[in-house]
Amino acid sequence: MTLLAAMGFVFLLGLGTAISPCPLTTNIAAISFLSRNVGDTRRVMLAALLYTLGRTLVYVVLGVALLWAFRAMAGEQDALDQFASPMSRAFQRYGKLVLGPALLLVGLVLLNLLEINLSLSVGGTRLQDRIARGGAIWALPLGSLFALAFCPPSIAMFLSALGISLKHGSLILPPIIYGIGTAVPVIGFAFVIAFGGQYLGKSFNSLAKVEMWFRRTTGIVFLLAGIYYILKNIYGVSIIPGI
Amino acid sequence: MKAKKVIGYLLLAFMLVSVGFAIGRETAPVVTDVEQDLLRRSADGSGQNSKAVEQPQEQDAATATSDPDQVADNSADSAATLPAAIPSEEKIIVYYMHGIPCVTCTRIDSTAAAIVRDEFADQVKSGRMIYASLNYLEKQNEPLADKYKVGTNTVIVVRFLNGQEVQRVRLDRVMELAAQAPADLPGYIRQGIRSTLEGSNE
Image (cartoon, each protein chain N blue to C red):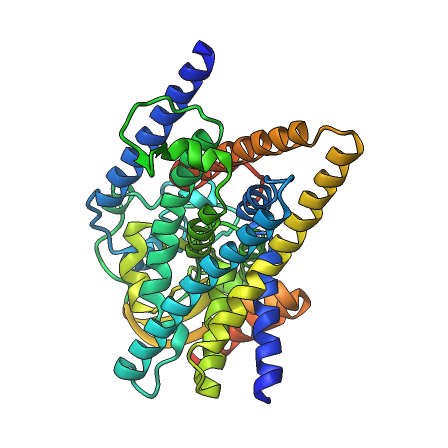
């Protein structure tokens, strides 16, 4: 397999990760978050870029650390997925516990439901207001958080991508391509929704109103996603039958 | 405005309680040898479980049974009622190790359970073969996940003689097949189990 073909395959692995049913809830939350600044095309694009960067950073850091450790410590008979098994389990275990509370907290902030006068002040403005108003920079930690929330199909595909890193001796490129692949479907949907909303707002001459509803919807999506993950991952409640 | 504030506080309280609950559960001590438990269980009345209850997959520490339709309680209480002796005979445990439940993962579980139940009915009936679905994210299953180096969903078929492992067949491609070629999944699992039985000179 040539390097180009291998990178194409890694990109497909990223796409496969994004469209698998497992991260569906986080993807809906991400689409909602990225598309909420309906009236500001530049901000939507910047948020999409930062979201991709956040995801890719996590995959690059994890990938490089894991491959370095594998080369330094593993025996010749060891397989990468078996060598990485303690790390895989740790990310799944703690990721699933952190994800729900984090989403719920972000939802509370986005909906301005937290009226606690903590000294959350950055640059003279309350942090809560800054997040709720839609600073694109928040897409970066969001992308990283969602990338860290591994589920079984995503960890299997990430390790397959790292297998290609090993085979082609390229430590950084496969995790970057994989990260972009995982973000592309989310960004695509976010653009379609944001520009659709913009068109709708302009058509009815009420862009500000549409934008307000998009932001409220984002907050509600985060709240519901947070409650869903808390019930599922912390209390073991099976909300969707069979999974 | 007041209602908004109350909802905010309630949701914040729910979040904090949930975080506390998760920390408490993660730090609770667990002392159970799941594998020896399974071997003892199979020796108890040819795999007939003394305490069988229905439980959802996510809440199981280990769901193991000679009849995959039934799910055995793997609590410390039930372990105490089992015979202490490890069987001096051959046993095959078909492990399905999984993490967070997902659609693809559930497909592997139901396929593997059906193959063991329907195609290896004689071995199951005699108590020689056990199907065990384990969540490797549960603390009590961590030693087993370490032993078998499991970090994502997989099926492992292990043959024991006098309680000692003598053969292990890893079916690491189950996740890939379940996602990309589900029609090939049953054949792959069936072949893995058969190769273990062939290893025992059946």
